[in-house]
Amino acid sequence: MITLIVRGVSKAFPGVKALDHVDLDAPAGSLVAVLGPSGCGKTTLLRCIAGFERADAGRITVAGRVVALEGMHLPSHRRGVGVVPQEGALFPHLSVADNVGFGLPGGRRNSERRATVDRFLELVGLGGLGERMPHELSGGQQQRVALARTLAPGPELVLLDEPFSALDAGLRTELRRDVKDVLRDQGMTAVLVTHDQSEALSMADHVVVMRDGRVIQSGTPIELYTHPNEEWVATFLGDASWLDGDVHGGRFDSALGALDVVAATPSGSARALVRPEQVELDASGAAAEVVRADFHGHDALLTLRLASGAGALVQCRLAHPGGAASGRGCRPGQCEGGSSAGLTRRRPSRLALSSAPIRSARATSVHECAGRTLSCTRSGRQSWQHRTV
Image (cartoon, rainbow, N blue to C red):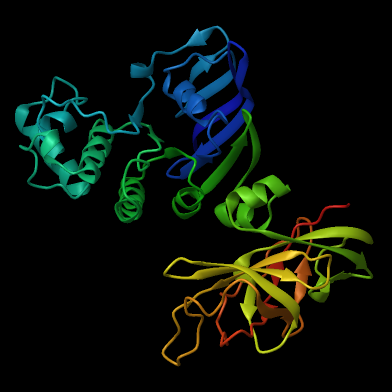
């Protein structure tokens, strides 16, 4: 069953077309992320689904019931949709328990109402805090209360409007996991609106990428990351490097050497997408120069300029920049701009072009990064993007 069906929805404001024939499906029990940069129309789409905005055209169906159609607009309180807003928006004069119970039907007995409130507070990890006031809670706790308040009435669909954006990084990661677990445990269908790529890729079962009011691509997180349908999607979803080369007889010739092509691809000029995790350090390789080293603690990102291939830039991610137990690794100050490096294939490898399915992806491993000598190799079977130039 599909809980949410959006077909051909359009919405315009004076001088701006916010939505342009948008289609979206959310199967029952799934979490769908609508991902895009600021101004792409994702929040307008959420507001149209919730009933806060009237769509100019198209149809919206929630749990088998049409809630929006040209000339018809069901009010938001009759749609069976719950919304978790960006800032929580708790009632400051009500206790935590009263905030959670605010949307429950008035006909319930006090004991039944209290049991429901307590159950959802336990569910979001706030058991025993029902008597507190919102100002006595941290930002993360307030968002948990907002989630409990949304889930308590049992909506058919939950809409999350960038609910983690105001939280610090550590708390944001923790709350993402907890919210995903709660939604899954309750069998809830949810749509998450976000501009954060890692948030969408880590939480969602299905991701819809939007730009300029249109859906550019949709699919599972791994489908979008490994098989983007255009360069903008590839770079928007994560760090990406591009290699130009030629396809001849099922082989792709580039500055990284000759690689097998998995899918049938016409001969001629082509462009390949390389993710940093698809490149690893090795003891030998073609000449390249380290032009940048960004240290992130848990890893480091090297940017290398190839001596061949018209000076193409390739990025390499080091999983253990501080050095493993063996003493190998890349310590701050060792891998700096101007260092020599190399990129090469270490073993026969297969290259997937266009829409070929991903075969496997092996994590980058650090082999050596000592002094001023570096080298890198593409690892495992990878997926690449093809474009005729």
